[in-house]
Image (cartoon, rainbow, N blue to C red; front, side, top):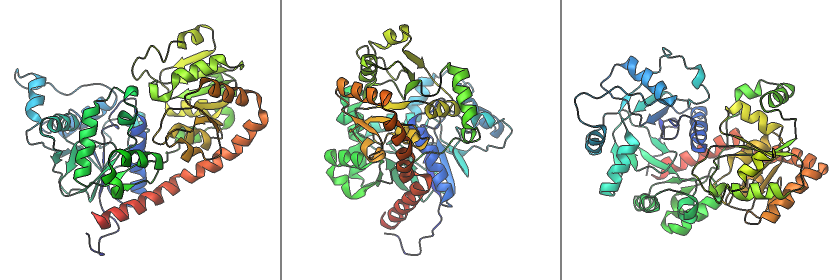
Length: 439
C-alpha cells in the first residue's frame, strides 16, 4: 500500500509491441491513444520498444534504424562473426538485456510517421524484447524482467506480454479473451495464452480491459482476477489531416480515389478474419435488395476459404470493392460518406470502428455480441450475428429507410460522446489513482 503522499505526477511506461507494426493494428491505435491520454494527465511517458536494434551502434544509426523498422524494413546492421541469427536469439533469451534510450532528434525526417508515433518523453528499446520474453516464458513459465533506468511508476502493457519492469506497477490490458472463448476463430497458441493469464492471475497483477463484456469473460475463466480488473473503456484520436478538410473536400476525395458517390456504398473495415463475421456479411449483402456497393477495407488476417467463398463472385459482379489498406485520413473520408458501416462481429472487446463511425455521423449496423452493445447503446441497427437473414434484413432497412438513416445520423454522435477523449482521460485518471493506492 502506498502512502497518501504519493505524488500526483509520475512516470508511466507504455509498450511499443504493436506500435512497431508498419501498418498498425487496432491495439496500436489503442496504445497511441493511451499515450496521449497519459500526457494529457501530466505524466511523463516512456515508450518501450523491442526492435532489433543494438545498443552497441551509434545513436545516429539507432535513430535511422528505428524509423527504418517502423517503415517496415527489417534493416538492423549485420552481426559480427558467423553465428547465426537463430542461435544468437536463443542465447539472448537468457542473456542480460541492455535497454537503452533512442534519441529522436529530428535528424531523420519524421513527417511521414506523425500518425504512427505515440506521445512520448523517452523512447527506450530492448533488443528483440518481446521475442525473447516469449521464449523465456515458454521455457521457464516466468515473466522476463526488464530493468529500466529510472523505472516508471506504472508500466502499462497494452497487450498481455510475458514481461515485467522491475520496480514498477505492471498493468496489463486484456482487450478480450477471443482465443479462449472462440478458439476456432484465431491462430493464437491457446495453451500459451491460458498459461500467461494464469501467471498474471497468480501474481495478482492489475488488469485493464475495455468493456464490461470483456470483464465478464475474464472472470468466467479466471474468477480470482475479479478484484484486480479495471474498465476505463477506450476512445480514439481524431485524425488532424481529416479534420482540416471540409465535407466537400472529403466527398471529392471519395469520388476521385474510389469512383463512389456519397451514400452509394456500405462499408466494412477491419481484419478479414472469422471473428469479424466477414463471410456472413458478404452473404447477407449479396442476398439483399440493395443496388449500393459493399466496400471492404482490410487485409487478410488468415485465409479461410469458407468465410470468403462468395467474395470473388461479388467482386466479379461489380457489387463488392476490396481495398487492402488505406491511410487513416482516406479511411475516415470513406467512413464519413458511407450509407452505413456494417460491423456485426461474432465478438469484440470494444469495437472501435463503430465508435469512429458514430462520431462521424455515419449510421451503424452491428450485433449484440461482446462489448458492441455497450458502445452503440440505442444508436445503431442491431442484428443477430449468426443469422444471415437477420443481417440481410438490417441491410435492407438501412438501404430503404431514409428516416432511419437520418435518426441514426443524429443519435450516433451523441452516443459517441460517452466515449470521448475527455471522458476516457478521466476514467484512466481514476484507474491509475486507484492502482497507485493499492499496488
